[in-house]
Amino acid sequence: TFASIEPSICEGESITICVTVTDGIIIQWTGPSMNGATTACVTVAPSSDVVYIVTVSSNSGCGIVSKAIPITVSTCCEAEAGIFTAGNIITCPGAIVSTAVAGNTIGPEYATSYFMVDGAGEILDISTNGMFMAPSPPSCLGNYIIFAYNYSLIDGGVDPSPTNISSLLSDCTGGENSPLCCDLEQGPVVTVNDNIAPTFINPPVDITVDCPSNIPNPPVLTFTDNCPALGSAPGILSITDTTTTISWTATDMCNNTTTYTQNITLLSTDCSACVDTLIIPGIIPQGYYQAAQVIISDGTVPSDAIVHFRAGNQISIIPGFSVQAGAEFEMKIDTCQW
Image 1: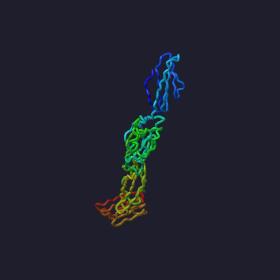
Image 2: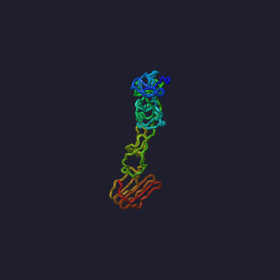
Image 3: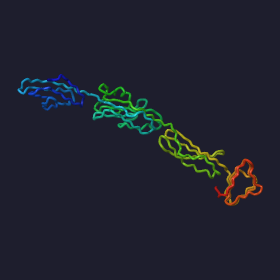
């Protein structure tokens, strides 16, 4: 008994064809790669359209019957880009972006690539493993789309390295009806965004110093940033008639800037040199006065002045010395400080 079939297969596939026979029947198959097969069923994998002939007869040689079985071999597309396993991504400029798909067609005849595409449809980068480097400065803000591209390696019409996504959107629909044997899957949106300014680590607090010689040398400060992690900035000392400051400016790769200022209160710009004995008569101007051994004074500290005495052994306040209301006066036994 012969089945009335004209089977069709895809390139690279195999098919089993059979006849139903009773005892005492001889079978003979002819056609490419049959090699004189005599079984009721044979499995073949033709690479192009072919016709196989099966002949059956009785052991006595009577009742010989032949049947032609044509097989059509088609170019079938099984491209499937799969489904992305992760959602949208927010990242820093120049950071590594990792994506992947599941359910894509895998085999010797198919390959999968990944594209990073800008808003104009231009393919900026192509990856075979789903990993990209996000655009670097000056691209500090933008949205990019990742696509998965599964395509046939034996379809000569497929472009393995396209430059724009627009043609693929219409040509790569997947399945047998696709104009080309390829499939395209739109995946996550990668948002590159860095609008966060750096932050200084443990910046110095405001201070008060006696004299200009006690102003500290500006240190180098370390700052942290979300893109990348660490940096450093030198300090800039500024002295005017009214202010004394040290300022630091940190700038990241996207020109986000932070400035920190340390204010320094300078109690006096008039600081006496360290002599052995210092005698201070009359109206005493605001300032710091020091001596290695002795300070002697019968002067007057006026109401608007801040005055400090510092001596190594003795401070003598003799008759006539006075401090007016509103003034600030301090005396201390200590070594010279400047």
